[in-house]
Amino acid sequence: MAKFTQNNLIVPLTDQNGVDAADAVELDSFNMSKYGHATVVIMFAGTVTGDNVLTVERATSDSGDSSDATFHYRLASAVFGAANSDVLGADTAAATLTLTAATYQNKMLVLELDGDETGGYNWITVDFDGTASAGNVTALAILSEPRYAEAIMDTSLA
Image (cartoon, rainbow, N blue to C red; front, side, top):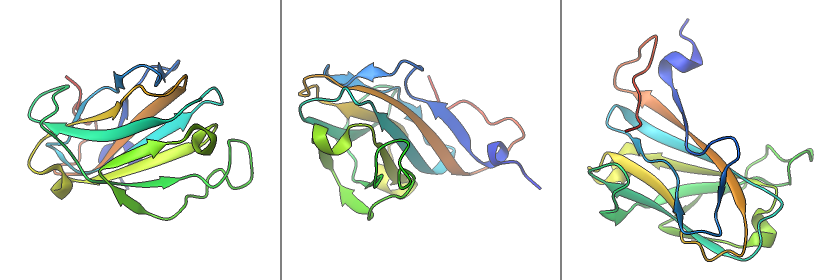
């Protein structure tokens, strides 16, 4: 029986300290050329204040921005530590997502992107426009539906 990590690649998009989404910041780009689906898990700290706008950029090169992708998202129903913090809300499609601080503080946001939604671009970057007053976020991506499963998956980072 194959292990989870033989069919899915876990990609850190920030370090363990996260990034300040109050700055115009892009998370690390990842390459989907060997995968059919990406799930991005973003954890918002309680320090998030002010609104921010999130987009998912697609390009032919690392950190490029040829166009914005339409993605699907689901927000956790409760803050970390609460009984429903692992229960996700309804699936919603968007090209941009306004992150209202009071809604996202101490919650998990899950983004989903199918390979056919990349428009033929292999490189994907999650972008925060930096309009928030403050806000630490950490994130990782799980790339799934590999074209070829391997005991040790190839990197998707530049």
